Amino acid sequence: MLPDMEHLTITVGGVVRELPTIPVGNVGRVPLVEFIGDSELTNAAAQEMLALIPAGTEILLTVVTNALPLTHEISDRSGIPYVVARKKRRTYMQDPLIQQVPTLTLGVGETLWLDGPHAARLRGKRVTIVQDVVSSGGTAQALTRFVERSGGTLLGYVAAFNQGSAALPVRALQTLPQHL
Amino acid sequence: MLPDMEHLTITVGGVVRELPTIPVGNVGRVPLVEFIGDSELTNAAAQEMLALIPAGTEILLTVVTNALPLTHEISDRSGIPYVVARKKRRTYMQDPLIQQVPTLTLGVGETLWLDGPHAARLRGKRVTIVQDVVSSGGTAQALTRFVERSGGTLLGYVAAFNQGSAALPVRALQTLPQHL
Image (cartoon, rainbow over all chains, first blue to last red; front, side, top):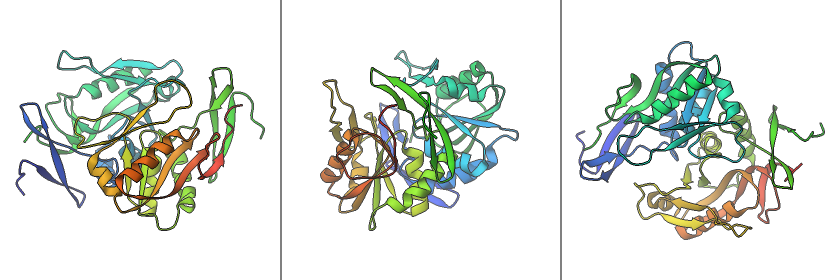
């Protein structure tokens, strides 16, 4: 099915969704993927993504919020534990690692926080980074630095969707258009 | 097992965890429950919480972030869909409902956002609110307003842990001490 301007049809493991598209500046419309609130799509993507996880992965690393149910489900199905970086400092954090997300614009980039005890779980481990959607790759780069700074070894990047020009070798189920 | 000051031992569906405790002001130490990054605890709690969901529930409502994998798992196991409120406005939101979290202190309370298309999913439905931990009940009150404003009917409150003096009739697996 050819996309109209308002929707983009995707199929993941037999689950079909009409993604809404959101107007962004002058570039056109960007498809919006929401795993949150959609168990069926989450489970279908998690199941398909199992095959993308590099052999030997000992722990998964992701970031809040959209990839959370997805990563939980991948962890559950693969038996590989996972660690989550946050986008806000939490009062309970102990010696968190702090990492700026590189941004292409001159605006202030997002800051990611990895609580100390969670960083310790990456130490000496073979780590795969999991995301729902990779677009510019800035978040993936920040997560990569967390792996390095924690003393882990990065095995690769896995995402449900690749949407953009990320220079990173991301293994994704599908490539989405950057804009329609 | 009696709690020491640094940890609190809990057992959920056969899964045992030593919760760290966090010093908070002068009141003492507060136990910290993290479902994120812990598939085993998430699954055990979700399974036990199935029995707490009021009969006739047609849709679940929760809020980011900590309850996300838990609510996904409950949704998955019960077949009941779920909707998620956010703590930040997202650029793609359409006619979101906005609700302030009542706060006991004079500080500025948190603001919750429910995207219009998600609010529409609650309309005319019997809704149960799901949280990981209920403490003051402020978040539960804000979610209650979302149900009312969306035209849904609230059936009840379900949480893994009740921790505090919430005046709400929360069905929880366990009550945690407010502080140690």
